[in-house]
Length: 426
Image 1: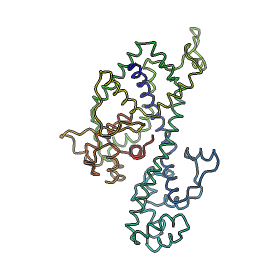
Image 2 (image 1 turned 45 degrees about the vertical axis):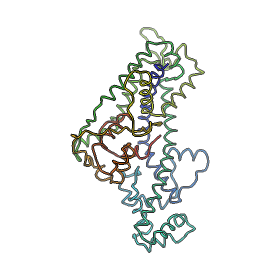
Image 3 (image 1 turned 120 degrees about the horizontal axis):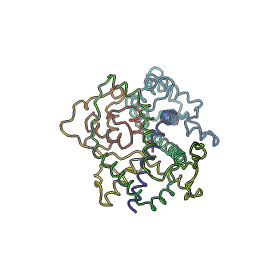
Image 4 (image 1 turned 60 degrees about the vertical axis):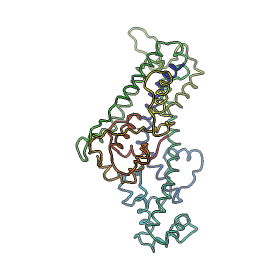
């Protein structure tokens, strides 16, 4: 029974990696992170109206709501501190608390003066007056203290925004998983039935799972160090989308080449006749169409949990089974979603000192010590070693996270990586 569980968990792990990859492409194309962040700030400033009707609610959840009005929020986004964080025509996916508070004060006061800010917030019947007026009172008209209070509230709002994004991402991943499960015919019920009748197939899948576990354990944290502004760094940035598509194709091939009972069966044709497309969407003889929908739904749900969850489960099953390497102790609770708990690898003493400096323009211009502390926590580095500084330990933790989430291993931070860590998708 354990072997069957390992076999089907391997299928789930590879399938979940495929779902996550497709989801990431959709998130980038629709700019979902930036749109959700804009909604969160509009809500904070009291400019996010409640959608009326099911269609409008659905459009907002998918990021197609135009958010009519929101004049203060739009003015805030036009401020150079915010506007320069993204490409023209796009919304930034991440805004630091310090940049937000500084831009907000300047937008509300026009000239950054305390008198103008006080006049703007004097109307306590308005949303801004209700929210920010008491903060200015408590700060005793000290702008720096006021900014600190705004930053604290901004962080609290971002926690809620993270919850919004997580729920939306889970829904999107489920529908992606369902479409892929049907398209690739990955029916959980049928797979279990076939594995119970084919011990040789189970053995092959267990061996494949053991090989994948071993290869993950042997991977070295040896991503090349690319200095800022190098041509190699530019190449990596421009080919990121191409690499993602190639990764998706590789995951599909790996799923199809497992030798597992997945995929559609084409009807037999005459020797010189090619099968019609519709002929390749036939059920295997023993597959019950009435159970297929349930099987696809189960597979889609498995895709939401994420590949790290299933690989972690496989590792634990190998430990129970008495073969394979026992899972190492982790500094964090095992992941239960597509955002994994990260096992921190303490670097050896002879690691390169280049890891102690920013390695690309994004790290240099967009990440301060406060951001680095947040990334250290997200990657599971113990609290006693969190210092807001670049280190080889942080690079190793990032590479480990990139590997188990199916990303290109670089050891460098970019905008999608930072957002995935600070604002988990699921």
